[in-house]
Image 1 (cartoon, rainbow, N blue to C red):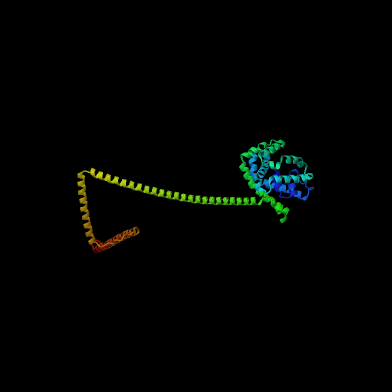
Image 2: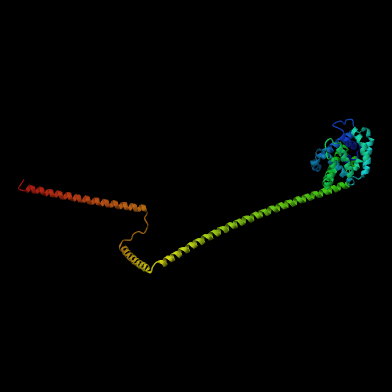
Length: 385
């Protein structure tokens, strides 16, 4: 139903406009009986539909309408775009809307015999009600949506579409302004393929140059804004990272300082405890000294004096003994050496004892021999033999 947009996107080629207009009423490959330029117009219409269905701006409008209108959301979006094109026609075209509509109606009437049956049925209503220009007003839109709602097989709710357009008018307009320059550029490229050369440049032209320049400038400005915004975001992110790092370092420093303070406090507490314990011991010792009677103190003093005298005597004796005795070695002897010395001394004592015993036995034997000899002599010399 977006006839105005398809006629505008056909450039200034009559046969392309005709094929683009009737394409919705032709199914499949039933186009062989048409001239080549009309076939090209039909194929261009199908390419436009495919391009629009996959454009992000059109998808956004369709999704916004899909909750309420479901499968009719795409048709409503097409008519909304025709409304914005008719409403802002002078921004996109060098020819007035009335001149363009009369020119396109004349093309359709001149080729009436070639038109399909459905377009022949609709053409009188299109011309009488001026559908191409009526979409620019809300009354024309309500009329078109009411008629489409009556023709729909299922409940479409299309009679309420104008209310939704009024509620979110700026959003739909922004989507159209994003979409239409892109589709115009796409169609100009397709037409330049069909009609190459300088001869067809003006006829392939869809949007006027001043508007194109404005669109290019606006898009460049938008890109610059987006780039600046991205740069600002990056700078902010870097600044946040630096702040986070500084915060982390500050936290670590504070934690270290807290640990050191805790350690210092613990050491101070330990020192204080030790000092308290030492003070308590001193106090207890002083108390004990105070509790001891004076007589005990005197006895202790006498004992201390006696012990001192004894020590002096012992030291004097030891000094005298040391003077008389030979000087001994001052070096410390290990345990093994001491054990060896003691063992050698024990051996020497045992050997000395054995020698003494042997000597004693030898003397006793000799004395016995002599005594026996003397006894034998006496017997020999005696009277009684």
